[in-house]
Length: 153
Image 1 (cartoon, rainbow, N blue to C red):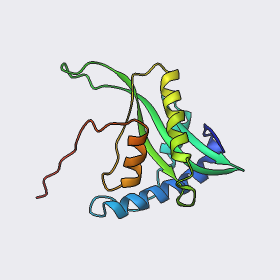
Image 2 (tube, helix red, strand yellow; image 1 turned 90 degrees about the vertical axis):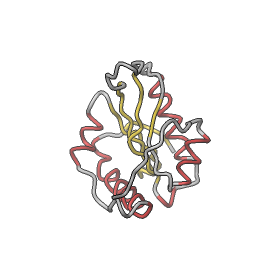
Image 3 (tube, helix red, strand yellow; image 1 turned 45 degrees about the vertical axis):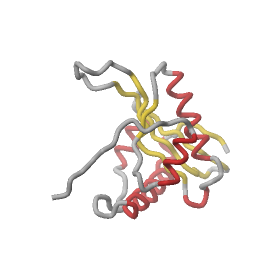
Image 4 (tube, rainbow, N blue to C red; image 1 turned 120 degrees about the horizontal axis):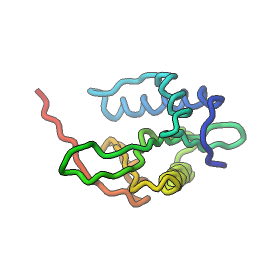
């Protein structure tokens, strides 16, 4: 298996994995999320823009999983110390390839991606119901920094 930056040729396989990701998320939070296809222009732009990349785990021509990462900066609030950081937007490893170290390999490469850009840290969001992902992120040194709370009307 190799971790590399995605090219436009890999978009069809990335699109299939996005459908798998959105299905899984809709099962975890059916009141707020639904199965869907990712917009192709979103995937394309993520590949061609300088501030973002899709890192893929690939073996024998097959994309096993991917991680979408984007360079960003803290919002311009006077109380916030400005930081340039990497935001991990999406991570998915195909169901049949899970528990084989692929998610870990993608996160290790994401850390290198951020270090090579001299960024301050990596940040991501995860659904609390996604217990496996939470465990993976904690094992990789991520810490809970914020809680989103919602009051239902």
